[in-house]
Length: 314
Length: 245
Image (cartoon, rainbow over all chains, first blue to last red):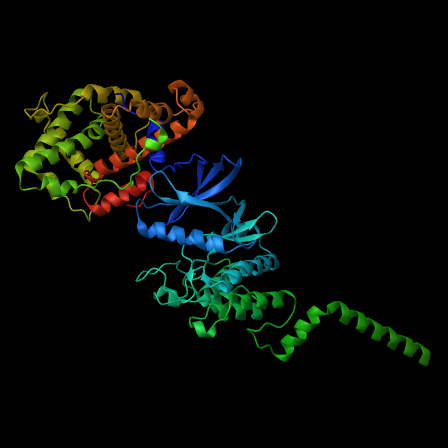
């Protein structure tokens, strides 16, 4: 035969790993994301006439990867929350690999979002929303273990979704025995040591995300956390929240993700945060800022009464 | 045959020993066979490489390709490959560069035929492919050699598949694959191929899935026999198909 054209070679590279669904219900359209464990394809659900996202493991005939994907699908199926992508279906490809079908999400990953949104208040709102689904999963005994900006999606209407539950495990479990899985900079020290972990590992990862939101610097890039926050003139209460969530000692961290979210919410509302014991001056400044309008009105009223009294005295 | 007849398989390639292990075999027959596989996998990319990158004419490129493999077999210098230093493919290319340089310096040795043992290879076919490349710029050597290595691997795999499906009386599987994947065009749809081949669209889907899976299995099996180590094979498989072995 004559040689294969460049187009044919390119196509064969793609179809060599192209997912084929034996039932014919789904047709893969294009690859939209690839991680160490699996690849996500945009696909068409022929039965319902809609686009979906389908995750497939990269490894051929790997029982470990199949087990992980299955565990991810089950974790997702048990977590019905607006901040967690819903799962529609699961099955096996023609080549035996497991796949699962989920809602197609449209939006930007958190790191893409940070490129276009500089406002700290808006970033903190996203962070607060991010804490919700994670806390929800914790309440059902599931730890994400790989929270990082790439695994968070911010939708067009400001909705925040947590993605990639492939490493999720039950609280107190070690996950894959003898292996350290997670992402450097976002992984709690006890997770990096391969020890059994609980929800405080996710607290650490959220602390790392908060650090990134406040400084635009990826955590673990060699700089001292406190110094980096101070250099960016991050307010003390936020520095304290960040430092508490990022404590190397799990016992010194927030006990739950809900507590982190609540502390950030308190800060946004102008309240005192749990992580920071404020001085009298700081309290006065905070209260002054929080009740600025009321204070100005009272001061104005006092000033007016004083002027009236002085006028009457003449 | 209905689509329910399509057998399932795991998709894991039947890996072979690395090319280095095989050409170092103590058994001369096993060594000869391994060398035959090596020549089959590398001669065409090498010929094209000499034609395009070294700008040799067709006759010189043929002679040099023949002489290179004959010399490598007689003097066993490909066996000196060390997996930790480079990919086997890169090693072959670098050996070819050195060989071509030596030959160019002692031009008298590069006479027609060169006295080397002749290996029967389809140089005319390879030359037609070189002409069809229509290259206007000089390619980056490693990239070009890799690209032609992949093309050659895929061509071999496609030919094996054609024979496999013909032998099994399932030519229609291969015809569907040929129409959809070997002549890629936006205009071709499953429905159109189904009409042309008197099949249902579901059959087209399943036949394509079957041939693509066999394509991947066969290509990876051949690739494993052309890599210098297990680690290199895993890396090549990841780069080629995005799969973890």
